[in-house]
Image 1 (spheres, rainbow, N blue to C red):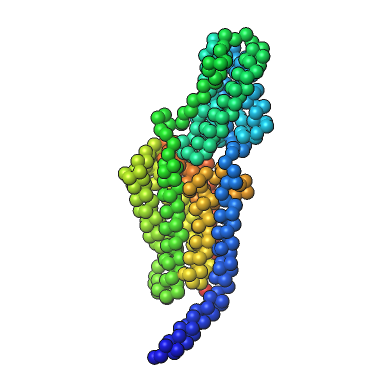
Image 2 (tube, rainbow, N blue to C red; image 1 turned 180 degrees about the vertical axis):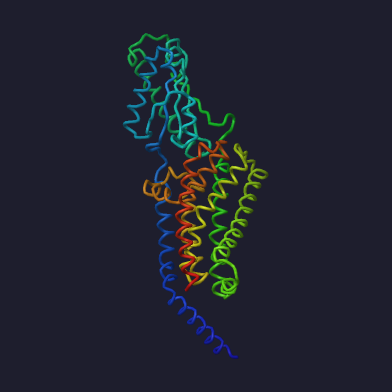
Length: 397
């Protein structure tokens, strides 16, 4: 065979394959949509600035419980005035330091500000007044940003107070040397005592959830669409086995593979990267299984509507790749643009990773992640119900 003949045959085979692609309408649609999704995600997902904006922060004034909180009240008013100008925080007043920590664990607030119980008396006797920032260790990027911004804001307030004089600002005689020391002593602490923020401790739970999801979503097209293409699925359907048993067996196999990979990620995180698991290992595995339950219906639904493994895989990748970034695997959802945060609330992986991160880093139990659990169950029931109907219909075609 000559070179010219070989080239001609290659071109004919290429033309045949291109015709196959052109006849696959779903494949053509995904050929256009996939790069659009990628470009849109990269263009909008990353935060456009490094500042705080409407971050939910809990505030407790322990000085008020002492009955002499005139200066701490002024401090709160000064903090509110600064916040009204900058829009950094969404401040909510709580009753105790315990409330601050529980609200952060439950995801209601991202940080807390605790005004010390001796705030007024310390200032009046010339000492620094304590202000403690409580940070969410499960989110080191946001925690670092909040620590930097709030520390700077409170130090700025202290500078203003020192510049104009505490006597004029608070209308109270003070035994205080402004030239020697700043008025406020800003301290930081976390939910888990002694634990420092670590990016890998933040990202490890996300990678666990992502690996299990990717294993499931990429394995199902081969397990269902490929076998339907080559005809082996028809042989199973002809056997005296219920169709739901066939589907259940394939889902169990892919789930097992995904769970094994998730356990490997957890083990490597602990052994090689020093991640300290604060919560229950059993609860972590339970969350991973629940995450699988919430997504398996989507995988079955897609494979039921596609005729080839290639198309099913393309659709899976188009959905799962943006989901990795939108669900907070690598960086906090709170730093995304607002409309991206809204999209994240409709992704099951968002709640899987949120629950995993709280258990691994903060050591919370089931009550603190009950909202995530309920939402994941809801996703699973809705998607799986639709998937079973679609799969039954697809098998009759």
